[in-house]
Length: 114
Length: 111
Image 1: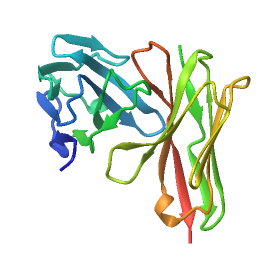
Image 2: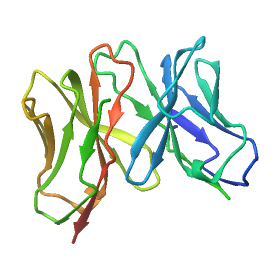
Image 3: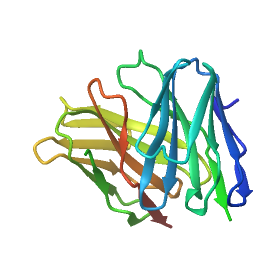
């Protein structure tokens, strides 16, 4: 079984709709991240959480919100989706005890906003 | 702010060596990574190097670091069609809370 899972894997939604992307992990890591990937721009950090009570904005948090329901779950919400939020979204985890700070990624959610 | 740059495309013939280059701006970068993204999948850590090293070899992979020029490269020897993927360079500084990723280099391997 995958250590980091994301649901849904693909989603098409209309402008103005609210949508939630979910991430679950079985790695037991405290740290979780949400990134978006756009062609030619690489990965940009949306939000990150170092534990259940700690939520921080990344470089492109406008238009997004998150919820850390448990150590294993970190959800990303788009309150009112717009077309330029069409992208590939990745969840990742890391272990603060890992000196190399390696990140472990989910398979991604491809979101299309029409 | 911190920036990581890499070329977007590289095409090589099967059996040749591939060299993917990356430059970064943060001189305090301590951990430098290469991630691989295969089609339809998330990123997987391929290898990494600490800033106090200038080379790391792992089977077909060789990572070279030039701290003076802030240049990182990944060499894949005997490139195979299965190496076709997007390769991301990423850097992180000691005590930093985030990893900065480059845009990714798409490697095409021609049979």
